[in-house]
Image (cartoon, rainbow, N blue to C red):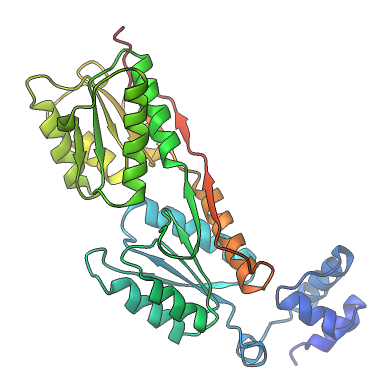
Amino acid sequence: MSSTIKDVAKMAGVSISTVSKFINGGNVLEENRQQIENAIATLNYQVNTVARGMKTRKTMSVGVLIPSLADYYGVSILSCIDQELYASGYSTIICDYSQTDPTGASDKINFLINKQIDGIIMQPINVRQEDIDRAAKADVPIVFVDMELPSISCDSVTIDNVDIAYRITKHLLENGHTRIGFIGGAKGFNTTDDRVTGYSRALEEEGVKIDPELLHLQNVSEESGYLAMASFMQMKKRPTAVFASGNDLTCGAVMYLNEKNLRVPEDVSFVGFENQTIAHVYNPTLTIGIQPMRKIGQTAVRMLLERMKGEYEGEPRNIRLKAVIDFGASVKNIK
């Protein structure tokens, strides 16, 4: 015969209401928490999530909505979020959607709301305020990751994109580079715009005129990174350094360099972004900007839990985390 919550309470020496509070994510005294966890493990008590959901109107599930589960950022952030949610007792419903579909995000938000999930964490592409309002009406809070949308009232976790692009460009300038190619995503997304701002600010501080030909701002893809590097390397006056500001852009740029047997940093200095694995696989080791993926996931989950539990009901928050530079051997000093 399976154990009941009453059995757990009796073994733990606490009330049934205390056990129920613990199971439903509430705060209990540390001593009680340990006793309850020990009793649950000893009795092999299994929570009836269906019954609990009917009683609490909570399913203990969170939707995670990512535009592409094929790219490095999407997979990495999803893994971190899922681990944090699982540790808090929540299951994850994973969805992706096309960035080019104007209703893709709305359709998936509706899908998740109909699944009666308790909250959503998402990368916001083509999201509208009415989507957020619809979720709020269903008591489903939403937290954005990767980018904020100033026109939409929603909690968000981003990195300080201006700062990391500024520091990377500054590093290249300090090594004597003034013709610095920049590969980014499309204009109009604050992730891209902020990184261009950081790049431009560093150049302006050093009195270096910004050359529009050295700004390649298309979609974030390997193809775009490849074509950007090809364009730079075919110029009569080539850049002496290139900064690829995204993972897929980094991979595409490196593919072109390898294909054409161009050496880093002898033929061109290079700084990539996001993927620490490629940085250490490539020879020489690449200098690369690293996003704090685990911290982003932890912060997004914490903010969502606070909303779902009613612990925070204030104005939308945007938390900007610092990215770091992993210095490799891909930047040549040409002073």
